[in-house]
Structures are given as C-alpha cells and as structure tokens.
Length: 566
Image (cartoon, rainbow, N blue to C red; front, side, top):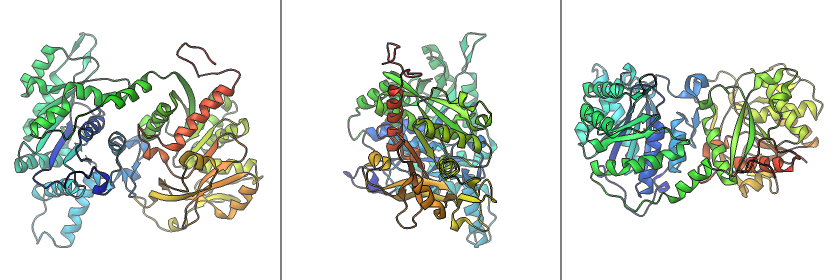
C-alpha cells in the first residue's frame, strides 16, 4: 500500500509529528485487542487522520501460514502476498484500507533478521542480546513502517497477554520507545477483564489490578484502561479501578459486550476513547466526526427485516475464527440485501453418511469454503451435487471450487474416479492438479500462490454481473488449480470457465450453465469485503439465496419482522 491510499490534502508527516498508540492485553487472551485497535483506527480515520495499524505477535513462527486453523484461526492474506494474523482483517475492514504484509510482525521474523545480520558480521563481533539488538529491531520496524506509509497515527497491537514470557521483548521495546519519544507521542492502552462472579453477584476488579501491576513492574504505566465486562461498570467500580491502577477516573473506559463488533466503535466513542487519545497526544481532529452512516449500518445488522439460512460445509466448523473473514463478508452482504444471514455450520465429514441431506434440508444456499487435506472432501462433493441438482444457490471458494469441479467431472462428464492429486495422486482423471511452479521440493511457508492476482471476466457471466468489470483482482492462497487438460471436456458438458488469469490462463472461476446461481472461484473474495463495500460475490450470492427462498412455496428460515412468510 502506498501513501496515496490515504487522504492527500495535507503534506506528509515528519517523524516529529508522528504519533503512536500501543494496545496491550491482560488477564486472559481473546479479549478483543484487535477489535479495539481496529475501532480506534476507524474513529481516528473518521476524524481525518492518516492511520495505519500493526500487529506484533510473540510466537516464533515466521508467519501463521504453516499453522493449523485450530491453533491460530484464519490466515489473512494481503494484496502483497503475505500470510498474516486475522487481526489485519479487522484492521482492513474497519478502516477500509488495504494494509501491507509488513504490518504483521512476529518474533520469528525479528529473530530471523537478527540472526541473518549476525551471520553477515553486521554486529562486528559483539554479543547479540535481547537488549539492545532484539528491542532495537522491534522499534526499527515499528517506526519505519509508520514512516513509509506516511501515517500520522500508528496503532500497534501487542499480541498475547501481559505476563507471557515470549512477549517481554515487545513490551521492553515499547517501554524504551516511550522514553525516547515522550508521553505526547506514545499512548499506552491496556485492555483488561472485569469478570462477573455469578455466585457473589459482583464484578471483580482484582484481575485488572494485577494485570496493571504486572505492566508497571515492566516499567509501563498505562494511560487508558479499556475494561471488558458482561455488564456496565458502576461509578464506584470505575473509581476503584482508577485509584488502584493509577489512572484518571475518565481514563477507565467501559467495554461491555455488544451484539455485533460493529457497535464497538460507537461504544468506545461514546466513552470518549478517541478524544482522550488525542488529548494525551496533544493533537486535534482534522474534521468533525460523523458516525451517522455507521450507526445506520449497525441498526441494519441488528434489526433486519428478514433472514436467510446458508449452509457452510467446511472442515473447521468447530472453530468460527477459522472462517473469520467469511463470517464478516456474510454480515456485509446481509446489510446490502437488508437481511440477516444465519449460518448453518455443517461439518463436511457428516455428509458422508447415507442421510446426509438431512444436514442441508431447508437452507437457501450452500457455501463450501477453503481448506486443506483429504478429511471430509467426499462430504463436500456431495454438498456440491445436492446444490447443483436441486438448483440451490451454490458458492465455492478455493477448495470449494476444486470440489465443484470434481463433482461435475464425475457426475456430469462421466469421468469416474475424477479427483484432485492433492487427495488421490493415482486418480485416472486428475481434474485438479498441482501448479507447475509448486512441483518438486518446495518449502511450506510462504510459497503458495498468494496475494492479489488479475482475472479477466467473461461478459454476461454471473461473475461479470457481480463486478461489472472486464478485469478484477482478488487475493489467492492455494497450490492446486483446475487441470487445463480437462477444460474443454468440462466446458462441453456445461461447466463454463468465466474467469481466467490474463497471462497464465489459469482458471479463476467456473459456473454451471442453466443453474440459477452456481459459481466457484479460486480466489478468496472475503478478504476484501468491507462493511460499507461488501464483496460483490457474497452480495450477489446472498441475493440469490433471498430470491430462492421467495421462490419456494414454503419459506423455511426466512421471516418478516411480523413472523410470517410472503
């Protein structure tokens, strides 16, 4: 991403003008540091600032690309072919700007860079240590990224929980940063938990006190506390937290659980978080903030006129974070169509039983998302056939496209045993095969076909109706592709290739002729979906599901606010 992505009405910021906001978390993980950081980024951008957001993760993996979804959740892919933490997805969605992969930094990247320098002799024989070498590398990446992206305010989220040993170098680095730049250029926000003890009927502040004490032992005094809780904080609790955590009463920000993450910016603004950050940084808004459109969008999410049900037939359905961007893309598409999208999670392995159709009965659309490995593939193929033959709207993404091609080859082309070489290397009809540049000895990390790639669109196709463009670009993450040797036979039986890569001729999208809405794509459109600019394919897929529901004599799962059907 270039500085041109930001508002250009003001001159570039100097290093002395640049400000940094550091967000840490305590007590437990998964409190929502990413959502708080993204929400603050949204609020500051709405006030006219050029904003960027960085995530510093303490784990030693170079990136999450080789990690199991059950370990890490979704791997978010950027335009510039980086595999990053899913929080970058939140940053992009809330601020509506594309971020570069360098905005996701791990301990693995830090140590890899330092060891490479040591091997080249750049430390001139010195002993390489956490302080100063690791901390200096962390600060260098933080400052250089803000400078290169011409950000006026750089929001930095430190992953993990305060007290974790692996996070100490990052906390030491930001402690040093505050000393070097001063309080007016670095703000510390600490996200903590105020748990409700049901047996006592009370909210307890002690975990927050201990978390802040742990930070102060490291040398960091937070300026602002965001306190997650199940219910509002009474005034006396706020005063107690302020007293024992050494912050002003107004710096104790309430973070009550919300129905949707898109309410969080409104809640934090009402609590005064953005105003307080600017006050500490001694800077003023560039324009008045208008949250009316965002409020209207939130109302549409919470109070839709009706709903549709989509079956997501996946491999990791027990962990919602594995499909985080897809979930949010459905929310955005629901807003565009004024409906709530209710997801029916279907573990693909369950569709391999005889009564598999019971898992799909009554849905208004079927989506098969991305994934890796042979487990559950036959269940996905069954789901594709069910949607194709019953003319239920179908959407396949990445692996979902592979399953769609396998199903069509077997059941519409008569290619018995058709498969992907990923799952059956001995298949007599390898309709899905490894990309040529992926053959041989290839390292696992960062070597897939990644990032944004162009796609030429066939005019008049479902794809064209969604984008209204002759060429589009979407993000990819895969090693296998449609085998071009079978393309003519597939097309002759009615599987249209409607999107191809302009240089390599790779198949990017397929559609079934005569089906009301059946599209599968090699790319991941969910990565570019935004609340106020939904992914075109998700928007049109949900619209097709609404039309399908209204075309049924009975409308299972679709209701008006009055509770009845059409």
